[in-house]
Length: 323
Image: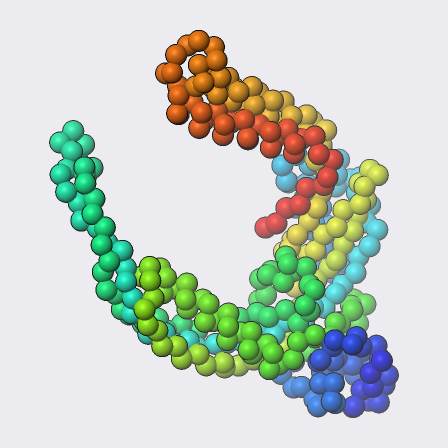
């Protein structure tokens, strides 16, 4: 339990929570009772019914979904969770020097222009500078679902947090397990990694670099997500839908019997063709080594794809789709 330092109300808080939001007055505060003012939210634009309709409409368009899904699905749970995210705008400047790989080409084939008999690779000194502003999102919940963690957040639409708005939809506002200082440290590391990826597009080996990483505006933003669960037939399926945008963050859904049967059939055909190519390549049918090498490769690839399709078709596990 925790006590709000501003309205004196008691409320639930976990042992690892570091930044708390009072469910009565909506004030964000540290565990020491210090008010945190840079607290924002993204407003809800899709209510429960609209989120459910959007989900079923999207799922119905996916490959292999039963035709009667939208009509037969029954929602069992619709909960609006307000997830905390730390947003940092990081100005990064990196100067670097290193070695890039280059090549010289010799003895062009007369039968094919642009093709050469000999290619000689060598290291070439490179240097440059990248200046970027990165917007880094750090989830305030350590064990958050990975798809929710990385879903797009329209931060330009942010406004000051209103607990009354969350209460309109009976939303559950989560506390942050990460402090502002911890979030800034993670943001700095992520920005540095992004700069590294930029440099590695120009050089293969980094010999020297100088980084100037400046953590600018950092704020806490609560983002509402509809956590949905529905039943189709005897099975239950879960989904997450963004309440501000209607974006289907993730969804599990069933595949029809006809789709599964088709997958098994096509997979079996590909498996047989692949096995035949392998047999020819190994001269198992006495047709000589005409397909050796290429036959083994293509036959093996077809056989693997066939096995995967057969497994997917035979499996009764629900399919998960991300967009």
